[in-house]
Length: 310
Picture 1 (cartoon, one colour):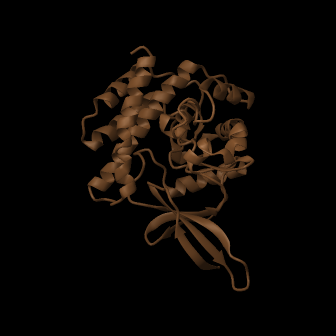
Picture 2 (tube, one colour):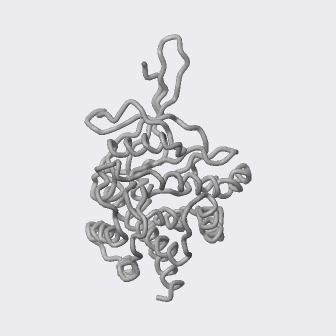
Picture 3 (spheres, one colour):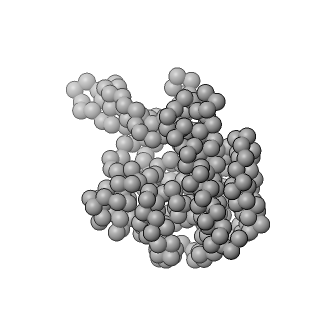
């Protein structure tokens, strides 16, 4: 197998993503995707490429829409990596939530996403020893506190949010494989709707409701803020679609907790990513630009806390 072409794909603030054209002499070229370590990670809880490979392989076998992984895990130029199928389609969130070309896809995408999420949550996390014990809400809050402390900056809105999360942490009523980054922008979408789910770097064993809250984080609405769930559907409708797809009932109160958690999580991640640029670990305009998003997440955290009566 020969490499015929190589192109760095947009995105991938924590991992490198390359589109690789491969083929043998006399054969047509085939596109595959290379996912490889870059310096740093989204979070102290981030999965390795070896672990991500195993999770995606299991999800594919469970018929969750995810690229097939192969040729890995392996090391390329000293960094862990793996290959996966290239799934054509749109991933840019602002196009998916705004453009007329995806109006039909938007009509079916929420239901498709919830069916995929229910199937994903049905995967037994105990088959992955590296996941360890299920992470409770308090475990995850503690990890956010560590990541915020590592930034070495004062962010009172995040501190207030973390205190609220500790005080209102829900019990772990059920355990599932949690994707951890299930959102608009990590879906490959065609005119018919959902084709694939990407970026399993933050997967862990824990509360499946976390994925629902993350779907509602303000940043993943891409400006379509009147539809709180991914910029494509109201919260109430998302929960109903989740139930219809075979998922358990989730209250708006419980969703609100995980939505506040998600906004805090993303805000702290943006600080950590910007810090990589500012320290010179990975010089990147993209990482530097992420730092400004922290202020938006601080505002949204305060807004949601106000709605919660705080």
